[in-house]
Image (tube, rainbow, N blue to C red; front, top):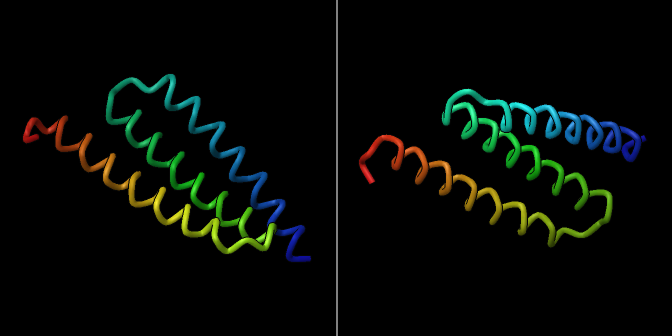
Length: 86
């Protein structure tokens, strides 16, 4: 039962990444693209967590944490650059 729910959640996350990728490509402003990038990274982190649960490998969660920290720093640096304060 849990594996079925996690598989459905994984499919929904992959669909959300695909929809966000369209927004990333078609985005009219740089801000739209930054938000789409941030959404894709958050979805990727949740996808890594689900794969870690299904594979039974807890070490993947460490990778997700590091990926989340790097994503957060990247968005902050890009925002500072766009604000012209970097």
